[in-house]
Image 1 (cartoon, helix red, strand yellow):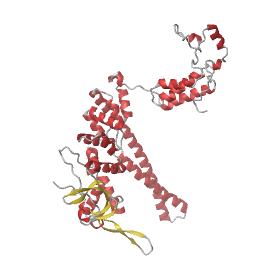
Image 2 (cartoon, helix red, strand yellow; image 1 turned 90 degrees about the horizontal axis):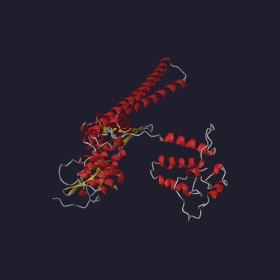
Image 3 (cartoon, helix red, strand yellow; image 1 turned 90 degrees about the vertical axis):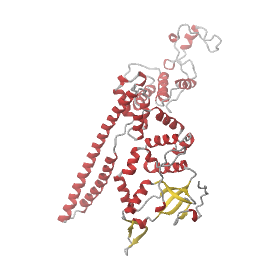
Image 4 (cartoon, one colour; image 1 turned 45 degrees about the vertical axis):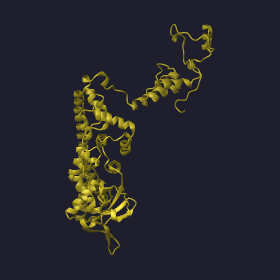
Length: 474
């Protein structure tokens, strides 16, 4: 068993031959000395691998994504490596070696360029012509990247390495819901605590509790759909409400079909934009060609045509990129639509109840506020509403319905605390039979005659209300 050593970046004997410590966590190391982590089967300890390899989709994209790999190699070839690789120091006998934790695609692109002896822009130098113009210098990739700048961290274990890798990957490739759930599954397998998982994934307790529910309660097919980003997290949570797995599967398939159709519509829209951009570009290129043939002198028209070509070319590239990235992802909206279409198969508790949208509720609030400003008089004059009652309805709509807050009692308490007369619009014939006020209450009018007389002291419009309430900031 190798004795654990204390890492010291100033001790060159601990580092691979040819390594230079630049500053802080930045080192220049021989490219050949960088190692790739491999997953180890068995054992009770967590072993680090690239988080993207935890899902089939991520593995396919990383290892077999030929187009993205080609684009990255071309970028390095023309512009050099723009971001350093991220590694950890790992003890190997009496020395430390850099092991990759972030930048797997960049590493693979460099490795391919070196093995295929491709000429690339040299990051070490550039040419300055006699005119003062700066030009890139080119050389074989094996020379340009014989030594490479990396950011290398000293960590205590694979979990600390994962935290660094997750942060690096999250910033660069936008890890999906599926990647996050897959990582929780793996961490739970190695008995990682809640605190460790939350620190690594930068999530909160509620998110982790929901994730654990998804992992434990979803059937294998639905969970696989989530891991591979065929459905998103909101869709998975909506499906989790359905206990019957057969019906859940039917709704999932229906929702996936809806998402497919939606994706096809988006593709058609992108195709139209792409065709329009190509047509404009072709037309403008024709104008430019005519000017070159006939030696026209209208510079304004020529410049306009060149601008159209440039703008159209950008739109073409953007449309092609968007078209290639489009894929069907089922969300809660598609799940809910499927639930409504198959509602006859659902238990009453699982059925979708259609509610007014927040926009429509706000439109209703605006109408009520108009009535309040007009002292409760309907614009058509067909009725007159009690202003205070309208204010209470608005309060409930704003505080409870729009805010998804089920504590109606608190809303009522807050409303009535702001009124001077707590009896609030009590009318004689609305007092239920058999209900009597406390005779010891000093505010109680013992005589019905006194009550009748007291009502004469109020105007009709202010009956039962003497306080001022400003619910609308006016």
